[in-house]
Amino acid sequence: MIPLRDDNPTTIAPMVTIGLIALNVMIFLYQLVLPPDAGQLFIYQYGSIPAVMFGERQLPPEIGAVAPSLSLLTSMFLHGGLMHLLGNMLYLWIFGNNIEDAMGHLRFLIFYLATGVLAALMHGLTDPGSAIPTIGASGAISGVLGAYLLLYPRAQVMMLIFLGFFIRVLYVPAGWVLGLWFLMQLLSSGFSSGQGGGVAWWAHIGGFLAGMLLVGLFKRREVRFFNPPHYHSSSLGECRERSGIPASCRAS
Image 1: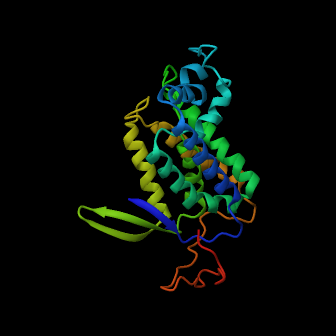
Image 2: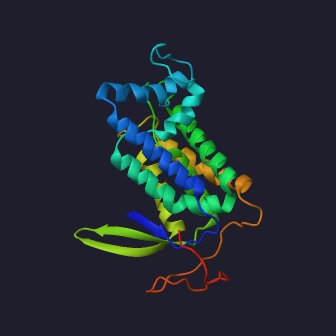
C-alpha cells in the first residue's frame, strides 16, 4: 500500500515541512555526486553509530567530523538510496503538513528533531555495540505519524493498493493506515535487537511512540485529540462542508 494524499485541510503554509524536504533532497544530491569512497566516508562522518554514541568505540580523528551526540541530528538528513529518500519524503509531505498546522512552525521543527533523536537513541539501545551507521529521516517521520494517529485518526487517506495484477485506489481512515504501519514495524523487528535487513526497525518504533507521547506538549491548545472527519472532495475538486469545516478549505 502506498499513500498518495489525505483529505485533511490545513490553515497555514507548511513552510517547515517544505524546508525539511528541500534540505533532505539537497543533501542527497550532494551524496550522489561524491565518489563511492567519499560517499561511504560521508556516512560514517555524519551517520549515527551506536558503538561510538555510547562510548564503546571511537572514530579515527581523521574521520570524526561531529560529536557523537550531534550525529543524532545529522544522521536524519542522510539517505542510503533514492527509494529510501522518496518513501520518507512522501510520508513527510502527506502527514507532516497537518502536524505542522497543529503545532505551528517552530514547535513542529523542535518536535520533528526531538522525535528523530529519540528514535535514534531507541535503535542504539537495542544494539549498543553496533558499528553500523544509522541514517535516514524515518525516525523523525515516525514521530509525525504517531502524532497524526492521535490527532486525526478519522482523516481519510488515499491509498494505492496492489492486489496481484489489480491496482485499486481507496480512501482508508488514517487510524487503520497508521495502525497497520506500526504493526508492520513491530512484526518486522521480530521483537529483537539490531538492524534487520538493513532497516532500523526500532528507530521507527521508538519515533512513533515518542510522537504519541510528545504531541500533547507541542500541539496548540485549541487543537483537540481524535478530531472528527473533515470533508470530501467532489469530482470537480471542490471542498464540501462537513463536520463544521467551511467549504473554503485546502487539501494537504
